Length: 159
Ligand code: MG
Image (tube, rainbow, N blue to C red; front, side, top):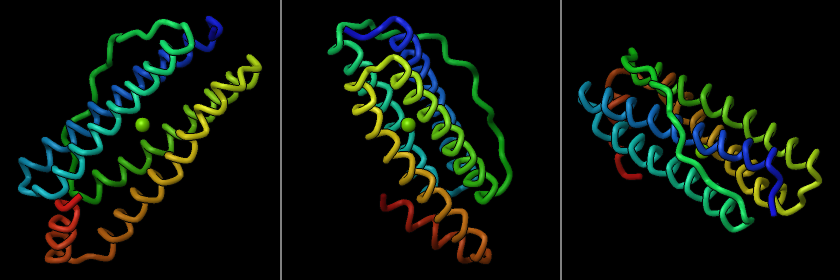
């Protein structure tokens, strides 16, 4: 059985994952309107991935005898500038999520809950990939000229 303290912390992370999902959906809608269908497609996949993270955390909580909650999700920003600006925001947000996951590992460690620490390592590893992927897209966009941006857009459309 999972501790109350850890249950609360994981439920807060579920809300954070849903907020991340909404952020990426808002970015997807924004870039679709701007005519970047590839970037929009990539971000919509990212939205689905964040919802999967929320559901995986809920499944885990329930498996451990806890209760998973769908809480209020705060409003997300909308309206950005260039695709570069959007992906810089994605990168910064993923760094923030990494910090949230690391803090969650600290809570599990303080609660001496080995199973939850083991469960969370998967997300620690996932964040390494998320940060690297977002940084990679930012780097490409910085190097690309006007035409290059449309090439990257079509590449990301194949995700
Ligand atoms: Mg996530």
